[in-house]
Length: 358
Image 1 (tube, rainbow, N blue to C red):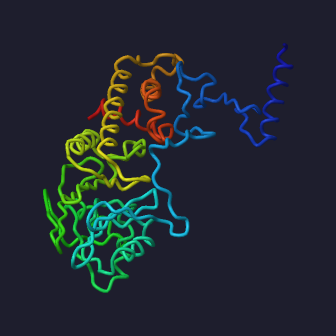
Image 2: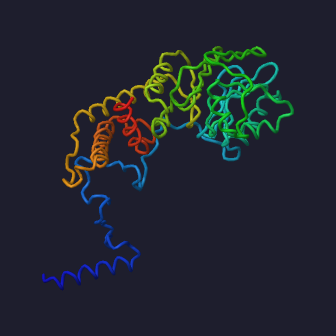
Image 3: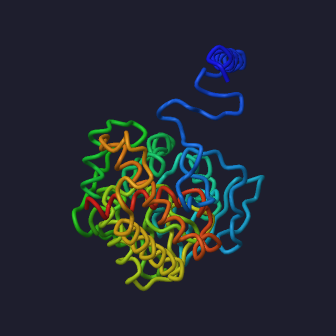
């Protein structure tokens, strides 16, 4: 092929690409030739599960074991009794809990998605007023309807939270998350109207101030954003701010003796078996990421011209570590945890980072 013919081919290719609205570096077949584009050939042994940022055609089906009772479409929520006076209310995505006592109601969390349902759920059970609101932690998706809810009450209830939660909310200055007027550091017991709820703090994991709520008579534990019964944890281990602390909290929950776990998310209450399963998954995740870190070589398969770019070298390395981690976990866990395919890449990236840095 002579130079004039080659130049004509390249020019025609560029004109065709521009006519289709594509950059000149992208062919009509979608292949990008410019630096920074995805390579035409994937990493060796690349998992079939779509990577972060890649479009997924059809996600894996939800296992039956992860599903909860159906929601009445006419109501939009359901209530589950967990023991004398203790109830969970859920839309099968978010969960809150309330405890009826002789003088009123203790409400734990006020998620915005349940804002319209919580008053109705309480009225289904009792006409008593809400006397206490307990914040599990500061995140707006769990307590972001508290301000609007308080505005509907004739008498303002006591708001209880950990002192770290109060500090976070004081900084946020969010009227939808009013400041608590009772705080504690290690332990606090709400004892009122013949009911008891024990609050305790076990350090940072998901977020500073994330507390355990224990109803001893009803043998029910509420810990939010740590355990996800039947499901893969939310991305990046539920956005845990302290990964070793998160692992320690799972160990603590596993060591406790309870019948029911209100986890703040998903379609059903949890059991001890759910905690054991998540603990097992986390141990497998840690082992898989650790092995991948030890057996993956820096710079393998890279363009030699990029070896002087340390960011590129480590990006290439971490990608291949995560891929090996995903491959190791898929056979055992893909069919056991709902949404395994949605967040397994997130979990592997998070775990390798924690093992390298924490």
